[in-house]
Length: 228
Ligand SMILES: Nc1nc2c(ncn2[C@@H]2O[C@H](COP(=O)(O)OP(=O)(O)O)[C@@H](O)[C@H]2O)c(=O)[nH]1
Ligand SMILES: [Mg+2]
Image 1 (cartoon, rainbow, N blue to C red):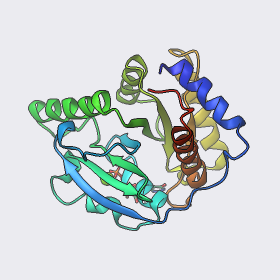
Image 2: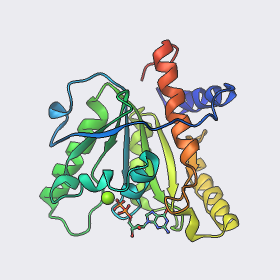
Image 3: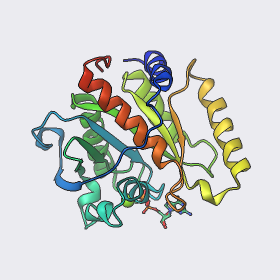
Image 4: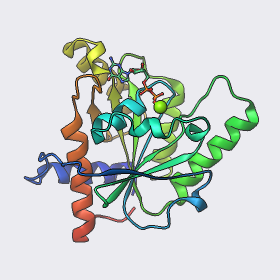
């Protein structure tokens, strides 16, 4: 699916009257950590991957979404942040915690290995239905994020952008930052991906993100979703 058709698909989702209903998280279980896509769970349930630069608020967002104070911490024991971590949610879908991209303090060899692992997973994992790219709402658009987003679009990978740490700005400033980011994206893309504004601290945006996931799951179940 290319960016344009995904955007159309999202518009379609938004017109469905049940779009805004929140999803209840009943169970969230750590499944396994894999060093490469071939070692990920042998399962066909839909997967939603989360990625972003280190410190963007990924662990906090995952914990907020799942109502687990330490779920993402499970994956933070040494080494595991360098692996693909699967969490099974409601025994129905996977939340996948990917290593951050663009580490400052790693050797070139290590950066290349991680890069290959992340891209291999994203391109090869057939049950991956959406990548959430996390971006700190306080920062000017960063080259590394824009390049990653561009690569997703060029690779026809459906993705959404999740702005984090909204509570660190006034609501007005946060909205302005999102608008400025959209403007930057529109320099490259005709249509925008789905965009969410969140705060793990205030639990803002939780229903929106979970409803979005739930709606895609529902479409997949009913067989109406366009295949990626
Ligand atoms: N105020 C605020 N701080 C946040 C939020 N999300 C994360 N943080 C803080 O940002 C830092 C990095 O968060 P973490 O979730 O570990 O980032 P990760 O490296 O991307 O997993 C921590 O000190 C968090 O407490 C948020 O929504 N609001
Ligand atoms: Mg983390």
